[in-house]
Image (tube, rainbow, N blue to C red; front, side, top):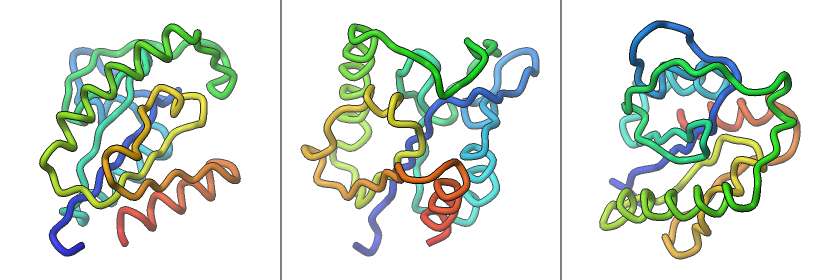
Length: 151
């Protein structure tokens, strides 16, 4: 697997920077997974990052985003219609087809809740190992992310 790249997919965050103007997606969102990624990414030259926006659609981490306040009072209580999930899944599949086509990715780490992950396509067609911590709270998942980025 030498020379292969890894892909990190970050879900949207309730916590976000309110700066005026445009900020790259990786800077706009400011939740724990984003802070860990920013802290350790400079030492991981083999990791590409994509970010899921509030509309469940994936963008490159450098995509400029304006500030949009988070919806709802509790992030974990979000509910999405089947239509929205299906539409986002189709867009995300097109995005990932382009991203992963011809690229030598060996692994994908999914850092988001299960609800958001429903908007992702089936990764079996990409022939990559998927790491998706789903047990425990934010702490164990954050530790797994740090270990994955630095590992």
